[in-house]
Image (cartoon, rainbow, N blue to C red; front, top):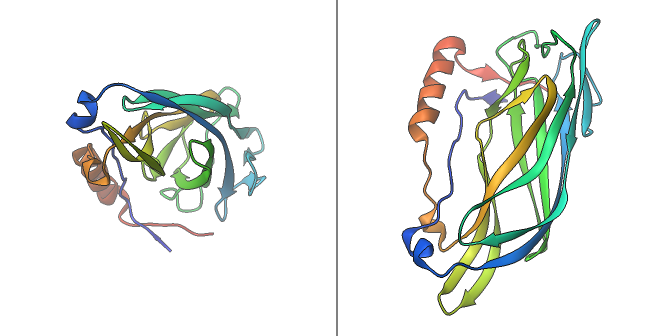
Length: 220
């Protein structure tokens, strides 16, 4: 399949009417986990699990996603929460491996967040990382948020959804140590008030990548 060298950035913002409303919060209980898929022709073991070993010979590292099981306050003011972390055991001088075409992603990561409160629902987001060859592993493609439906209607409160917006976005996985996956969570009054920002940054990154590598091809 074709992998277009473009990033989708955005931050879900609360509209001014929500900002003026009285502050409130409700308990949100959720857990997270994630699965890596090693792409074709990559020095990688453990594909299909939360832990993969990358590289070969003296240049190897183990990458693990550690999920969370927690309760947070979800309200009409965005709050920064932890969604888990990536830990990488690469030693001094470790660089992430590349595929035969060095401009392609090396890992697919399927991130799952399961809510039990205020709704019972599960969302899965797919993120692509690469191209490798450096001491950190950048996010190449993926949406910056995930949302859950919410039926909350009371005087002054009409919120059909709550949203997690990854922050920072995009981000890089360190080749040695811990990388936190965090997001801002809050309710939103109407889908029409979702405001995507950073479009100029996305376009600039897409143009730079097209000039450097043209269209990227994902295999496997």
